[in-house]
Length: 235
Image (cartoon, rainbow, N blue to C red; front, top):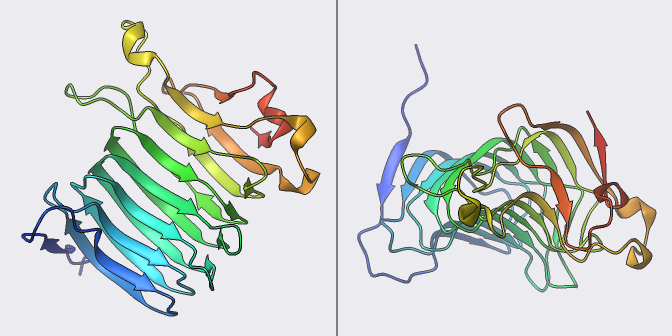
């Protein structure tokens, strides 16, 4: 007997609400086999805010903001969560960030697929020691729907540090036949990339397999310094 189809939950309420689900300073919660439809009225499908040790298996679609948000609360990291699923049709896909005191750490993503977003596929702010297995970022122009401006964004190597990626596909809205579409677009982009400012060599993240067989763009930095100063690539 095959696995049943996900249960669909569609937002029919007012526009501008932050999220359909929010798990705040809690532990051991989760979502299983859900398709969460924001009807282009909700900002996000799910927010994990200081959440620890959950299992989330869900698909998120049609949001005005970021489909899945992981954020630390002032008193708790968001950590040790296991996450599977996808984001389709949103401004951005997945965000991990902290606040200086607490951050997002030790979370595991398995085959999480981000497609048809217009800004950032994966946003890595204040986060460390997260594991990304087979993460997919937005693709190129498809059916006249643009891909993301940035597939994977590391905002600062001193904040998004010591993360581990396994088989990355870093698509963006690059288009060889139309340079205007490609302007400001990056498949995997590292901001604040200054080796002289890197506080600890242990902050360097690891990528085990960066796929470019389908026209994916390179790993780039905003400074022009080699990306290998901030990300170690194996294959």
